[in-house]
Length: 182
Image (cartoon, rainbow, N blue to C red; front, side, top):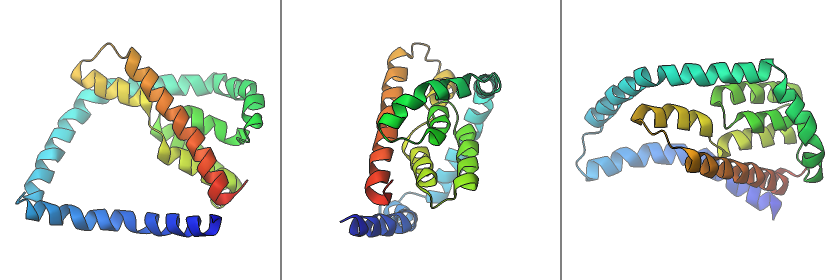
């Protein structure tokens, strides 16, 4: 069952993006939407949003840098490793899992380090990559996008986002153990 499931996932992941890239213009053509004009309008709006979010982006990146440089990340990982060992979660991946709600680029740096150290076909590399793809940059999204539209009461959004991240991390562990084994 594991090999068949693995083949299905490989086939699905190889064809998902080409199929989407084919069907989006086809559906737009059927609905008589000018894809190029809509794309250009979206790019203009994206540029305006990018200018507006720069202060929030600087604030979150400085905070992340301070958290890592202070050693607080390493201390937290050391404290949490007995718990992660109980569920079979490699301690090496924990910094990437903890960084993911804060920063996508910071997490990408950590995942790249893991891939260089352990290899892309290792369980650690696959787990880190799956976590990267199955979780969201919750604090980044809240700081940038909520800041851009002026939302200040974010308490419930933070709780929902972090819960979704925790579920994504646990699901990534479950799926990676099922497909790739320990």
